[in-house]
Length: 225
Image (cartoon, rainbow, N blue to C red; front, side, top):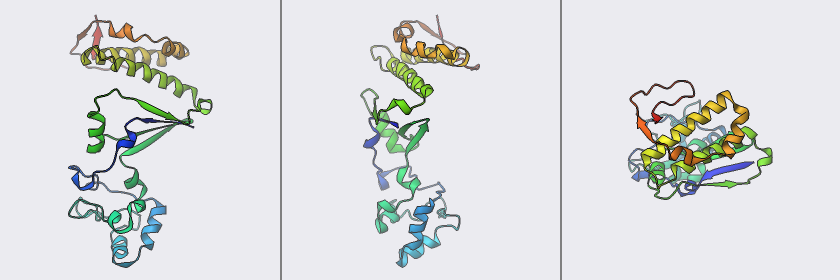
């Protein structure tokens, strides 16, 4: 199985009590059954609190908007008392996520987390990704075409000799062409991605438009002259 991750993926580490928008506030978390069994087996005073603060359906009973195990220092009492390896699946993985597409997995970190956003948006270098177990033989062909198309668009966005406005306009124009081919002439999509010429889009002149309506497979935010 082909696994693709952004280069910054392993840079993420929860900053706990230093986070100004804690994911332990305002979320109702469902606990996976395997972890729920562990929580039910915890002994002592903390075990009693766990059973008192977890519903019969297996979710944390919020204290107002706060997780009942978020202490006054905005640190997790589950980690402090029984260890980080005892976090439920949701708490352990967030903001990391993964999506599976027919024989391939893509991983990332969600921008709803302030620290994940800081890592992504403070990176001054070019965005890159790492592919593990790069065995394309069992990967869906349509997915591989979309990966090529994404690489085409990334090449436009990373052409830093052009202004950011030009790159965005060129990307939208290329996306419009791609979506038209996908919808109307899909048999030509493989050739389009293989022969893609980013300069065709970057060398155009674009004019702004006030028409922000979006028709099916059309993007009207920019118009080539």
